[in-house]
Length: 314
Length: 320
Image (cartoon, rainbow over all chains, first blue to last red; front, side, top):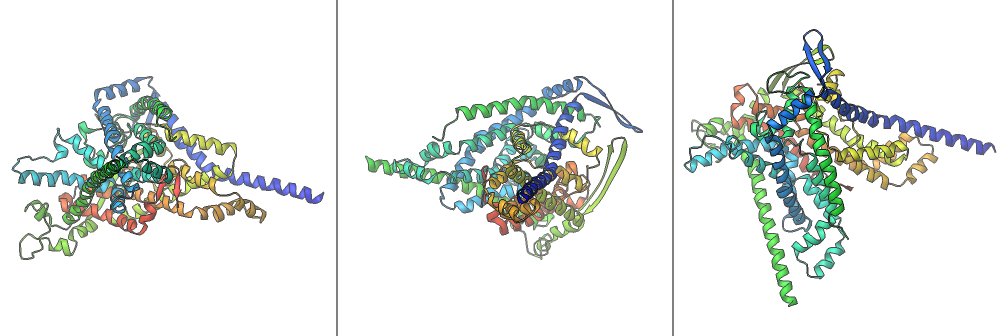
């Protein structure tokens, strides 16, 4: 009897300790979530309905702005719609060029074709050295090296490729294509290596060539991963800076994307607009909400459609 | 007929292989070519590069010629210039509520290196540890909160939120977490993200028997977590640490936004390329030397930990 009571007591103490331990440690990520996700995003909504006045003595004072900030944000989006167009062009390049290339390269590595180990290292290089190193080197190449060759070819061009209006966009796109591999390739090859070998063997026995193997077996088998990476690309369309800050600093001009614009503005701005051409924080918050309202249903809807109507592994 | 099929199958496979091989060779040439050009340019005298027009050639090592690159090549003169002249000054005034605060910085190379180590090592430890901790708690303690957190993190990954910089910056300034390393660490203490799901899958796969046996032996929950489960996952945690270390080492935009008076080396290299007022840095070979200095530590880390960095990171989990 005494033993049973003791056991019950120690079990109760054990689960209490467990709960205390759990509460103590889980409180850190929960608090972080509440502050840096819930509060910050809720704060964005509140900020979008406020306007601020600045006084050197008392700092900032807030007042209700109604929908003024939304009107200002929408006007700005509409007036400089090339930022949206550019963002969509870069998304198109990602989907039409970068993803298929990454898949084909991953297939090459997965099949262990000639020098695949070496190529894996090279494809990982942009991830390792990142935009800041390769971006700055690229910037000098499309300026100094380009002008060197232009001069050698007898041309009198005086501006690098990043400064020529008709070549700027293509130059930025080429750099982003070069930088787009890395983790994507590792993710695809890892997923491909999980495909059951007997499936590939039986297809080969049935006379399938490499392309058939790729199209009819590998792609359907890794389809969920492709969808995930595609949706990530779509959902980041308005936050993707496409390395413009590395290539242009704060002066990307007509090459700007929404992601780049929001970053530069937030960096330079305050609760009140510090100078002409810079939007205040409340207007930027309203802009963020408008863009979220556009992209959220699109990415959720796309995910649903792609998962429902995409190829099945069966 | 069957023989013909076999031949055509072989031909198509070969064509596919050749096309992909050629594309990969081209890509390799671009990447290696860029790095080699950068390295060679960083070893050239700026007058040789700019005035003599030696943009593509090897550095001129003939010491008898008036313009040559012997000092740059043999004594790494451009690198020494960066080392001794690297300097960043900034005044950052901001309001924390109604209080005006002004931060100053006058950072040389060593200060930037210290900032970089604090930013990258501390940040990578937090980014590797926090998702592991949260995943462990969610996987091994089936309370309602664990399930809710899992669903919330899943939703966070698929819900794009655009443009919350302003609120974040205002909050950080008001709480005085802006522009200090501790504030940046707190900002990073999230349990969410892709690695949460990687760790979660791992901890779910590890048997509960270890824990039950330890509990019978009287081990505390802390001992079970830090003494049994985390050592089992140490390879995975260290892989995530390395990946995050590389990412943070190269990240200059976050310090520029949230730590403006704590410049890191990546930010310094960017600054030298765009905004430096010191005329010493106006020359391309010297700027490129800065880029190469930033790349060297990462290349060393890659050589040592290549297999771990390029290990099988998949959306389903890290294979050890």
